[in-house]
Length: 101
Image (cartoon, rainbow, N blue to C red; front, side, top):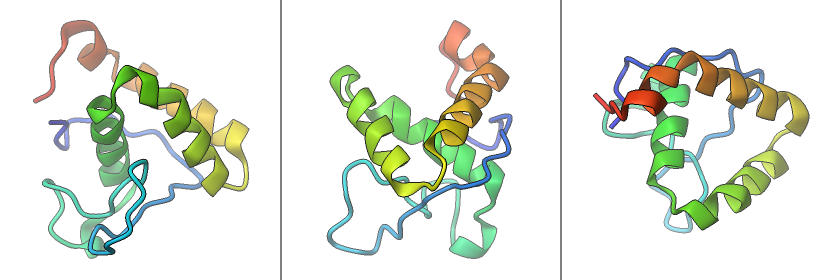
């Protein structure tokens, strides 16, 4: 969905999960996805793309529980949420035009 065209935001914390684990929580952001072949390539840009992919794959009613879950994984939820807002601001072109390269 979102390829490497996502304009990243500088998350100080970016919790990710290894999708090879069988008990992956449905709100985890997987470290491997269709754009990334292995964890060595997974940096902040890939995290931002994976996070956007995850959020746009959720049903409307899952958004708040997703935010709550992600905030439970970080030390500073307020900063994580502000950075998420910055990520959305950086990528308004996707939201306004429905482009998902």
